[in-house]
Image (cartoon, rainbow, N blue to C red; front, side):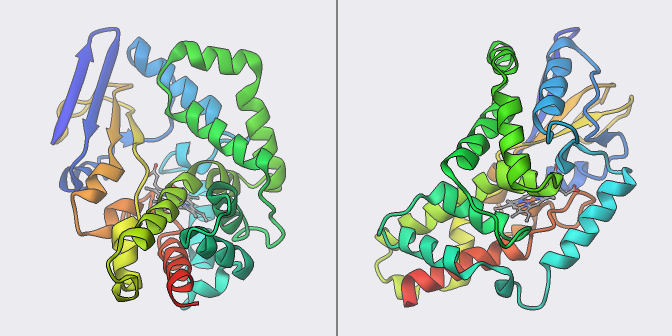
Length: 292
Ligand code: HEM
């Protein structure tokens, strides 16, 4: 259910990877996302790296803001409302869906920039993904995922993180939710589009694969999301101390469960505002690839 690595002064890390445990631990009042430098050395380095990286350069991205941040919660609610109409497929840019359907059929196209453009156009109908915006998204993701402090230092000194943030922020008109989407969340959807390509090539009879099945087989969540303890408390996954880092292996948990809610943290205070439109994107690209 949970694995713990604890060496006093050095590291205090809990990894949770089952859907039940993630659901049970998520509401714990001591676990939040503020990511302040607290706890042993490794924990402080991770918190600093994520705060530095998950930013527009001047504003934090929503996924490192705390549960009680009223502006975050209001922006999350507003985005959820906008992205959850009765027919979310009408929010999608037809030209980009068609290009992604060609990619799935094996007719070429760059899946990274195309997917970035599809999600970018949820915020700005004129969003245009380029080689530069896609390279910036890769750079930001690598910086967010790497636990190598030396590599982080090199990225800070060479300015590569700052440049990536600037490129993504300019393209997203400064909106932190759009930077999160086009720089971080997009990678999950790229994996889903690649999954559709594999399904298209390997299905015995692709016309018999319903959109619901295509979604179930390709939708994946983030590899990990992070919580930090802001006090002393007991929990289902063991004792929490100030600065204890708890990671949720959302992708692994999603693959262990038929319940799609874990993939978007549905029902929790941090639920993804795109939980409805993302499946609509996968469905639109699959139907177009197979039927048009
Ligand atoms: C396959 C695609 C996606 C998956 C699996 C996914 C999953 C998630 C998950 C698990 C979280 C919670 C993170 C946490 O608790 O720390 C989250 C948060 C968020 N997601 Fe997504 N996401 C996807 C795509 C998108 C897209 C396309 C958008 C925007 C259009 C988006 C916008 C957001 C925002 C703004 C948050 C932060 C919500 C908050 O706590 O204030 N996501 N997403």
